[in-house]
Image 1 (cartoon, helix red, strand yellow):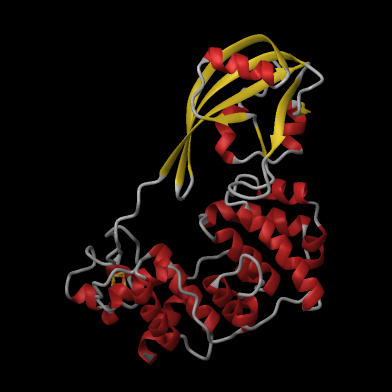
Image 2 (cartoon, protein in one colour):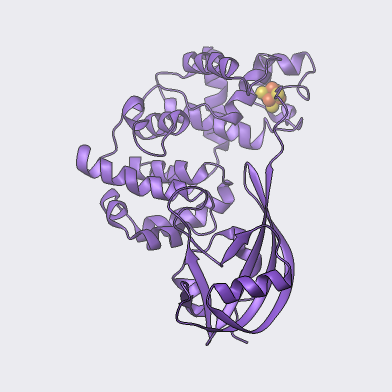
Length: 345
Ligand code: SF4
């Protein structure tokens, strides 16, 4: 075990990825980076992280930020609940923990949006606690090291592997050890049967390598197919402004802005009728290109119409110029294909 820890840390000292939150691993910076990195690639996160820290440099700033500004800072990162949970957690940290992130894993998991993996990462990297941070990458590495053919999506197996990682984390440099595992999973022990074993610092400890099983491990049960939602989206312009509405607080993409849309595919005739009911007098309506957006568990398949109209006083939308849409309103990436129609010309 000691040899494994040492081989990994020696490699990390030479090859660690240079990342902005690593140069100054304060609890706040580590927390923000870990939240942004959930489900999102490192390259994508870096500019968001820099901008976020410039706009909201302290936990107090985050606790007090206006929701629209927060969502705008997050626009394009997806999984917007992460941003809303950050603010909720910051408010709790200010009121319960004197504006300092708690250092114990158990306290960290009590905060909104922080699960066992993120709590382990924050506690070990920012506070030097010898606790594991086990995500899918670490499960993949460990199942290969052990040549385990058990299904790593199975809760019982996951728990067993987590217990083994807990034993592996050294009392000295636990944060570096966890980050070394993260880097190994991101750069060497790659998924989909493509590990770079010849460059691996822990190859001599790896049973899957010895037994030539690296492309068969990890074993994962087949994922369920994503649910498909069909939608009809309307890009409506009237008097030089575009119609927007705010999404509900619960559910997918909470509190973000969107183009008016309905479930199902509507024909042009059905759309015309619906728009009249919404309070829009039509001047012109044209179909626009189909678009698809993939979330982790569902897909939106969207047909659309570009609509020129006059607004009746009963219309319930918020009306925004192209400029305001770009700078003020956070519209999720799911509607990106429709954004290009938001030009007054
Ligand atoms: Fe992964 Fe290959 Fe290293 Fe084993 S030897 S841990 S499979 S990269």
